[in-house]
Image 1 (spheres, rainbow, N blue to C red):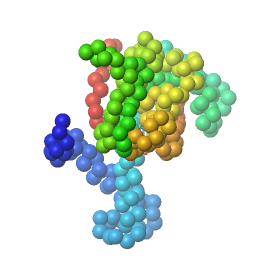
Image 2 (image 1 turned 135 degrees about the vertical axis):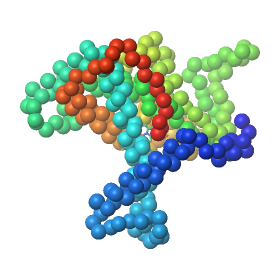
Image 3 (image 1 turned 120 degrees about the vertical axis):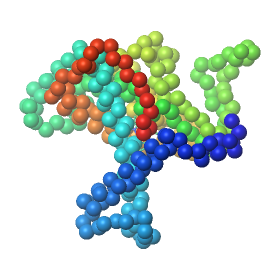
Image 4 (image 1 turned 45 degrees about the vertical axis):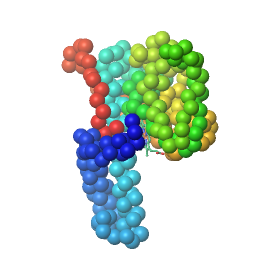
Length: 282
Ligand code: HEM
């Protein structure tokens, strides 16, 4: 599509844009309340001043908005899909319950647990990984190319005219969209059951491979080695921040899933419910 047309389309208000802008307003309101509660004697009106404090407040409010969206909806949706899968696979839910009993037998029912305890539960962690793989939250990674380059293909493609393509030339300024779901369910990476939710795949050798992702071998949390392969291709590159965010998200998932499965048994109101994924904030 021609660039001017794309720029024009960008100006048109869509339902999604309205949704994002009302989200921003709500997140900033929440951020202001957070300020009032946590910064003694400060009632920031970040919109007015240009002093250091107001600039700082604006920055923090923007961060609160990103963290509410990036850090809340992502883990909440992943947790929802984990529970949905566990409802469809009650035997797998029982395997997590058995691991919880083992951990509790070491610490008692009210003992304080550490991250080592959560990491010592291979099956619960396999469920988290498989859900992150199978139900990726963000659909794609977007990169604007900083210079002309070529993307090598691991599997050559033969075009309709019979030409074998082994690499794709790309131009500076071009937007490249990397399909997370495509990679996460690619049979050449995951085997013929790539389209099946099967946590056991993460109990074997596969779990020791991390060739692509920030966490385990999937793209759900973005790419770790992109920078090393194509040093100049991206305007946004992997940062250590993403690494820590991924592990923070996994810790959240471990703790909440543990508590929920320990306290409740999850089941669907009736069998065979098919849930259609729709894009919300992300
Ligand atoms: C299941 C949980 C999560 C998933 C699947 C997820 C996924 C992602 C993805 C795909 C990106 C884009 C990275 C890129 O463009 O290369 C991203 C960025 C980001 N995420 Fe998450 N995320 C999760 C949890 C969290 C949490 C818990 C936080 C914060 C507490 C968070 C904060 C962020 C931030 C700040 C960025 C932007 C980083 C940057 O541009 O350098 N995310 N996340």
